[in-house]
Figure 1 (cartoon, one colour):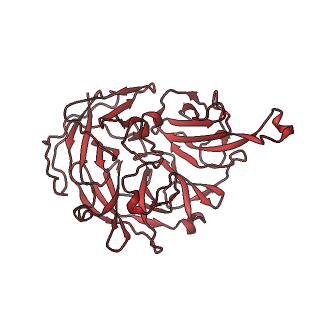
Figure 2 (tube, rainbow, N blue to C red):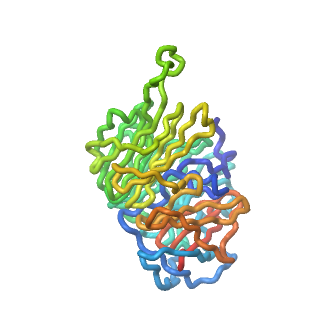
Figure 3 (cartoon, one colour):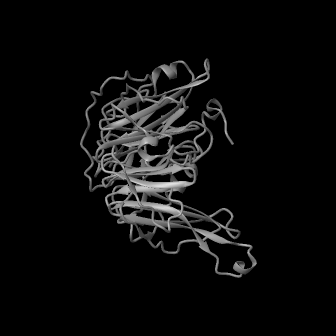
Length: 431
């Protein structure tokens, strides 16, 4: 089913988005911020009083109190009302708009795509940035290309050489591929990457970055190709393992690269002679230190179903999460399994269950999972060193989120913004 951009406003069902609706409705794939190494510790609460009036987009002058030591876990979150992270002209014109926010080592980035009702065209993507998550300023506009596609930036990843941003075509479908990509070393100047010229494809089904570099899966029809890069500019084709029939999910982290795919398994029952069931689909995970040779991993107690969804996410730069949902006649709602690995080779069954709790946001060292209740109260969990989740206490300053919101993790803490980019809050993890 497809809808116009204007009618889609307010819907946030994309798999790689941080969407705050209910605890069970956060379905983001991929990370909002991945640093190339261990990220900075979070400062204490900024010295700024809440205000109902958005601050001007000027560089921050607030001071940061004592940082939390990297080995200590935060126990609560203090919230401060922030400025206007979206494009001010689009917000003041009250046009329909899409806004996404991301964190990275250098601060925070907001991307706004506004729908002009007068001419029926999508404007943008326009970029805003903030060093402290409180005060925002305009940072130009991305080159959208020449074919006038309605673009929405939905993913930003960070690797050794800087950032990659990808955009998909606006519409209602979920799990849409990226049709544009840009790279930046500073979050200010963005260079478009020609997908057809570099990858020989019109879209990318998955993109990730970490301290091992960058990895992407290009899609041309039903064909898939895996690519790796050390700088995000020059890319090399990586051979797809013979058993990985449909690689669509990839991760870069300290241990190298991991990809997830769906593999058909021939039935061993009497269905082989009757022809009623040809095969079951099961997920497979593969790892590679450099992207040149792939090794199949064994997932303990993996489920074999008639329809299997397997994906990999980067919990942080040290740990990868694999999540499988297998559907069958006996389990029409799906059977769920999670595993974690520090090297992509040895996997252990886990109870992290991030997709049921929210989407993991990481600065490379720490990992948080953000969700909300049906009443709009934010629920933030920290992933402990032994891969357990602990809810952070919220004080009276915590915002109540109604409908749809965006969330990002950066050097100052969490930025949570409404879907239009008109209002934001900064949440600082403290002890």
